[in-house]
Image (cartoon, rainbow, N blue to C red):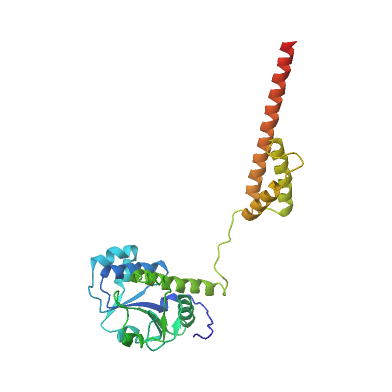
Length: 273
């Protein structure tokens, strides 16, 4: 139930997104949420009438994210926390009498980042035991549902914050790369070329034959399976050089061993004469 989203990140995309915790019972959850927020490069935390605040328990759970707690905005009502926001998304279980526009965590991240250049964004989390009330959810433009295991669907508050903050960070990073997916393909060596791999397979078969692992001229399916193995691994140039070195050392060992055996056999023949 969402229209198309044009995601374009700006340097402060995440800085305009606030995490709002409503009526949190356990201060440790506030600290855990602060840590999740900072982990994902965000900073804004709003607390609506927390049960226990300030709290050493929150600081302890926050670890090195105590600065997020220090800068947290504490208000009495949800209206105060979202008053200047142009987009408000509330976390919700799906069982609602009147259906509301519902988004996935990924769609939540995309929409939040897309609109962050236009206005402030609020992602609202409810109480640990019963979430947000219907009245509070009616103040939200969208609801977001984390599709957890239906047999054990209850998520810790800080964990839920982590999931949505992660999706917002990923959307921000993807948008920063002109929409290209995030992947890690940096490597210290280029992949081995096909021609070099063919030479390696010849070298490998020769070595395995010298070791009597393969019957000379009749590798059966062994070389095919080894090709499949190396094709799956995709050796780089340095790795291929190492493997060639191992084969050469193996051949040299076999050669010198055969030579010593031949010398011993020759001496034995002389002694027998």
